Length: 197
Image (cartoon, rainbow, N blue to C red; front, side, top):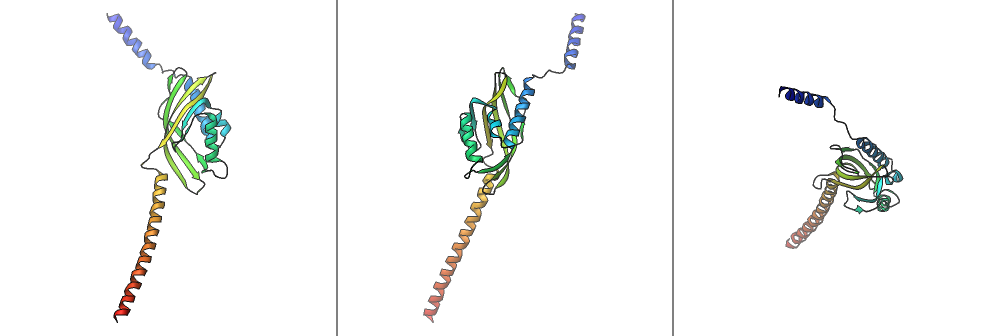
């Protein structure tokens, strides 16, 4: 019995000293994250599309959904290119909350990102984004199968900019209305005073 206890203690000591080997897939996924981030920050659409699965589904921060690389291309071009684009530039800095959860040739990852936007209307702001994504390994390469990005609906710079604009226009309109009403009332009172005398 003493021998068995000694062997168990020795085995537990040996296993405690051994570092847990990380799945090599995590290094490949770190490279994928780096390449995707560089593609977005460099406005390199072709490099971005090269990392998407043929059946990719992307839910953007404005709740639009793209269901293929071609739909991602169309969304990107509408938002980032041409005379009617909305976004002048974007810079992302994504981080993961923990290692990708691997299920064979599928992985699920999630985290946050500090995203800096410059819009064509002059707005310039940072968003704290939460994201989640699914990757699949096909023909030896990891590809993005789904991606979802969202921000805090109740507390974000876009909301506060809109509220500020509404506040300014409401204040200006109320001030103008007050001046018109004040002028009209004072004129009416002057006429009545003139008639009374």
